[in-house]
Length: 98
Image 1: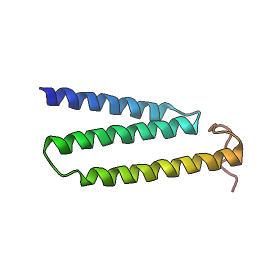
Image 2 (image 1 turned 45 degrees about the vertical axis):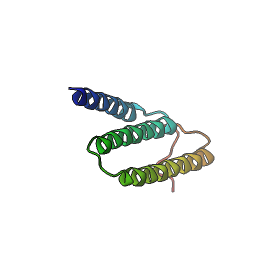
Image 3 (image 1 turned 90 degrees about the vertical axis):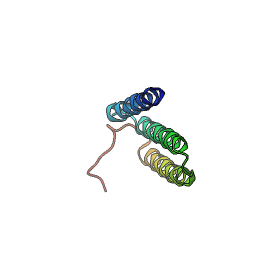
Image 4 (image 1 turned 120 degrees about the horizontal axis):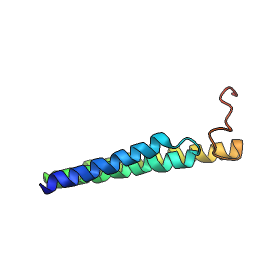
């Protein structure tokens, strides 16, 4: 019973993060933060699953490494966009400019 409650909680929080990710259309920073929130929820779900079945936690370290690389890449794209356009609004981007 407790397992189902915890799984439902993770599922609810994950879909709340997906809703924020799909509904944020104004700022690139909000989109990146919601993506990091989804990665954090997936990390907690993976950690909970691996500790529940007494597996080794080496894959958690690999997952954290890839999530840090993803966050760094998103932050570097954000800095590049702010330097190029002056802000992080999606409406101010000219998609046809090379």
